[in-house]
Image (cartoon, rainbow, N blue to C red; front, side):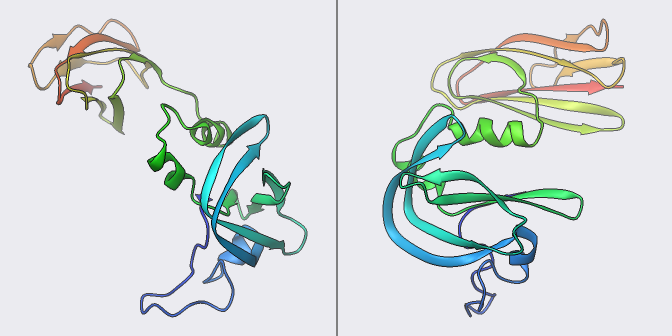
Length: 204
């Protein structure tokens, strides 16, 4: 699990916790807040990757020497820690990455790839025009593949994935077009109109 700065800071009534991260999160994350510097703008170094941080810089005290630093602020201050707790792995990041990305949007923020690799996720086999989004939903009986075009012009999407089993039928729900299933691989090369969607229903 990944969390940004100050999780569990206050309760539902707005009362601040005495330890931050609060509500026992310090035991799970292996650190507690040591100090906080608001209004900071700085560079972040995570492995061989660098990106900007802004808003605040949270400094941590390691509890029990189990959590290890994985990212550092420009002055070599540890800003992100990974801790193993129970059956999972947890990362706390002492700033707000999304705030900087909102001010200066990037096509693909480096943190997305870092966290995908950390979670052992494989990138989808997708080639698409800008502003085209892929989403999927799966169930024992099949799968839905969504291709959203947020752009103002028609976009092209080429997507490929291995299926859990041989498909019995594949239908694009917007155009009602049938796709002939040939194997346990789903391939689509389609045009998605501006501000529209294509939805492929795959039945097993």
